[in-house]
Amino acid sequence: MSQQNRYDLLVVGGGINGAGIARDAAGRGLSVLLCEQDDLASHTSSASTKLIHGGLRYLEYKEFGLVRKALQERETLLRAAPHIMWPLRFVMPHMPNLRPAWLIRVGLFLYDHLAKRELLPGSRGIDMRRHAAGAPLVDSIRRGFVYSDGWVDDARLVVLNALDAQEHGADILTRTKLVSARRANGEWQARLQRVDGSTLDVRARALANAAGPWVGEVLHGALGRGAQHGVRLVKGSHIVTKRLFDHDHAYIFQNPDKRIIFAIPYEHDFTLIGTTDVEYRNDPAKVAIDGDETRYLCESINRYFKRKIAPADVCWTYSGVRPLLEEEGADNPSAVTRDYKLELDDGEGAPLLSVFGGKITTFRKLAEEASDMLCRALGSNALTWTAGKPLPGGDIAGARFAPFADDFAKRHAWLPAPLARRYARAYGTRASRLVGNATSLAGLGKEIAPGIYEAELLYLRDAEWATCAQDVLWRRSKLGLHVAPGTLEAETAAIDAWFAAGCATPGLQDALNQGTKVAH
Image (cartoon, rainbow, N blue to C red; front, side):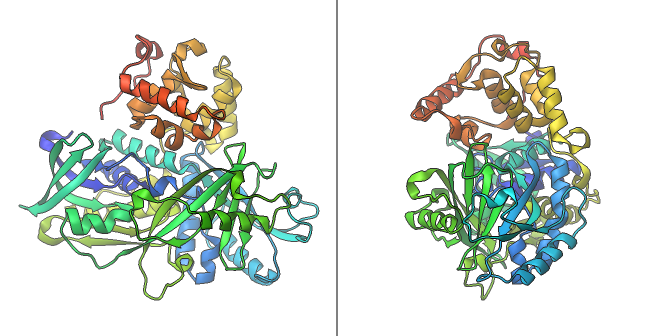
């Protein structure tokens, strides 16, 4: 913690926007504290469709500025973390009764040219009878289009932003909630509460409210203030099935209700399908898919694939609440803008910045604009810096993941190939810190659960704020999807027991010689 718990900036919210703001501001020299009431990315920011995209369908709503801004960010992000983000080709089957081909071609032309592209190829028409993506589809689909966007491991993106913020001097407190904050003597006097009930008093020259679905609750409750803008809570749910196709393209399907559904290769063995758009008025922490949403997603897929699916084929589901910027006249949740507004209240010499809306693709730009506003309010002229900087683990030569992964596997030939690939993909260049000086699997410590060794748990605990099996199996990774049938409960219990014990095999930390242990 900073001296006498005083900071330039207190950031409330450990989702992608909060972590992004903390990183940007800390890199500009501000002393920063971020508090998150749960784990990093434990809500909206781990429940996205995992896409870095401009939002092709937003062109129909004339959101040209938002689409352009998002398209400009795609390649910036892909270069920043090529281990957790990579290009993905999308196939759109043509359904003449939904949108005419000329309209799709116009939309794709705009999508290709609204922003400069260097990494991503442009769009083109395809013959579904000859393209690999046509084989799984019903025979009546003969034409289609293919275009480019990107994929991201959303929860790891949040963690890497928090990690970079910390490495630029920020303090990150998870499982720590803002209870109250009031302006006094030109600063914010805030009280935080840890999960064990203990409290911590801090002072900050400025406060950033990036609480996502809770932005209004923080304003009206903890801060006792109002705002010019508001958020509209919309639930988005996804289902995961066993793999429905063998190629590496994703699909974007048009529905008769004008919504679109994605079917995306996921975790090697699965297909991710989503998302829904449902108005939500309950506790964002308790959001879950319902039967109607599951049936809707299955029926949407069954219009296109030869192989039909039913709710019984669903392996896993997840849901999140999107805090969309409230707009007048937008009755359809799908039509509500995915853009954002930053509201600055500079009263009494203690700035308050509140974030309304946003999407994962534009988080870096949002954080940059937020830090610009906060720096001006605090009298700092620090310059922007994140556009060309890699995230932790992303300093991969030429942003080319495949050669890097091959080299990592060769340098650690004793690692089983799938494990070496997973370490490289999840941690990038930081994978070497995890492995340390180990020269055999025994050097990674005990195997706490299949494929999960103590060295990885040590790294996740000491460098990435993991405190339990849920953090490890479902946010820092999706290993929970890969456990053998009937063993998830036992593996969860084993990992939780390791965290509860609070120590690893004696001497393991020294043997690994990572030098990455930090206090949180």
